Image (cartoon, rainbow, N blue to C red):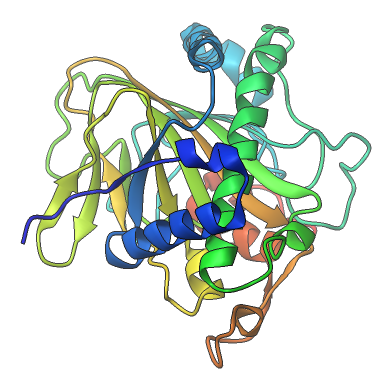
Length: 315
């Protein structure tokens, strides 16, 4: 049997018909139950929005390290994280990547008791970054909303099942830069070590460098090759938990063997921080006690990122 990552077109969703959404949801559930990953095309985001965000990413990462560190990632997980600041559980060494984190702009919430809720850490040295990212960011969020509506209908739930859990979504954005290794990667050198994503669904744009690999139980590591005009979508641990394991959160990694810099942009479309995630709501008789989305994601962040070891978190 050939292991392949499905490509799913969203073009028919323009009709807005629930039956069309449900058919798509069935395709998504089949793909994520088997593979955990799929590509989407015809997703309705103008190429110009993608290019604007990508250009901004390249400009940001081109600044000197000391300048980027002026917006060092904080306890809300907003800002710049350099090479060496991320070591994923069970990895033998740190990830070879730089990241700029941002999320929903929640001004005046920096002292909130809700995990991961607060203001962004935008760079003064690049005042255009927010405006360059925002149109793409909002377009991906709308795409995420459509995917969740399809999944809800496929589970025979109300079309707006996820809506009440996403009133203030933790739509966490990451600009990712994988520098070209100067001395080769080595056997244990990864842009991102093997891991599963923490939240519900991830929507990823990747350049044509390649390097994203997913782990198949039967086929080992399989390349998620770049396909133009697609996004890569995968299920995270929180949605897998929520569905009682019916949707799979698949282990994946990044090896930048291209010989040059690699860029990607990820939006992790997750519920509101205070949303209670209970598998029973998805029709699962068991699956563990309910968890709050923000608390769960924050706990995973604390395991992976070094900046959480420096200052105790308020939660």
